Length: 350
Image (cartoon, rainbow, N blue to C red; front, side, top):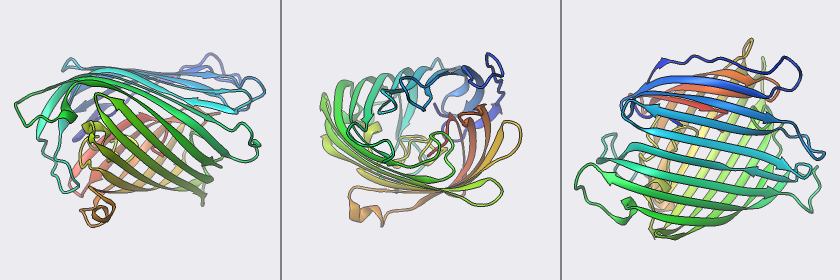
């Protein structure tokens, strides 16, 4: 879920619902009302469900449910079930979404402008099921390996007769891949110390045929006054003769380089750096300030010589589950020193 480029927040009103004040919280809810130039008025709601650890595990499983609509007759329904099984040895951080939405197509490359080449509407279904496990590895060693399964179906309609290539056409494809991760963070939702590294490689088949790789590093340091300094680095690569435009490497607009359209400055490779200070405040509130950079290019050598895009901003947090340190966030960012972006989402950016 995202409020895209040039978004302006009209109302961000949160209510916290729970069954009781007993130690374990069952659910939380968050209504959202926002505005963006791309989608006009957006309205929707989030519902989070929490499940006690099972089978000797210690991790809490969750289900995120998000429903969005707009005055432009756009709709999206998304769910992210995150389940732990078999004493936390099996982790399923899945994601499923179905949408009737609109967006913009931008010039490929970091040198592209904020002006889109064309607009499009689409019907889109997406599903992702990673299986992360540590069978044969002691729980004291924070290493997981796994398989990743994806499915994608889209029907795209462009607003004009702009040069259409296969990457904008309709189609169905499926993906399979593998992952390897090291995770010593002290908390999944709001880490204050530890290190995270994950490599993922995926192969896609069907109406589109391509290959993706991703390397994700994150580290967290506690400093003073309950403040954490967080650093993230993400490298992505997409290769193939027919890559869908939204599977190219670049920002996602909500977590990695916040406040822009997810299709802007995409290319074959991209690297994103993020630096953030996070501090708990009072009651259920917390705050952040952050700085992010983005570079993209057709190959590794060009990646570091292309234009560098920057984003600086701040955000507010509302704890939906204090024991699990799970926050709803709203971030305002200044991109390249001249464009304002807004992001409303669940959990931290990285």
